Length: 178
Image 1: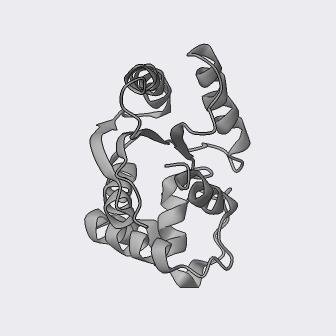
Image 2 (image 1 turned 45 degrees about the horizontal axis):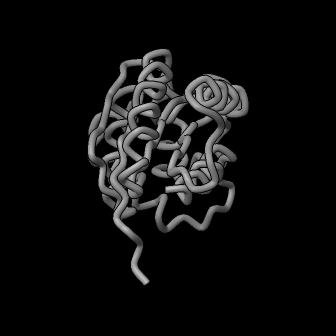
């Protein structure tokens, strides 16, 4: 049986998120209705509320809608950011329902860690508490971000999940909600 088409809105922080999400949604067969770059975590949180309200209103007559939030944890643990998203849910009509297609994609610290993990096997396991942005390994990947995103998503799909960062594993489970 084929997967029903789900039209999603994606809110995300910046270019590294956007390139990754474009490739990932395409690879997973999701249909982004809109991709909303927000320019930072505070703006993502604010936009999440706007898009959530709109989605919940439209779900009264359209059942194939979803919302993906891509936001860095900015810490080594994703739990505080997830709690922050859940608080926003409560403020806009209640917690995530079992059938609501709302996925939290939260890289621990930053998405650059996922790129390093997925694209540079020699760096595995990555340290989710380490900032890879100033490192040469990230600088090399960043030179052609579109190609790097494609490589990362290909690795995401075929990954053996050995030594996978906990936040990446959590994101895989979240995507099942869509």
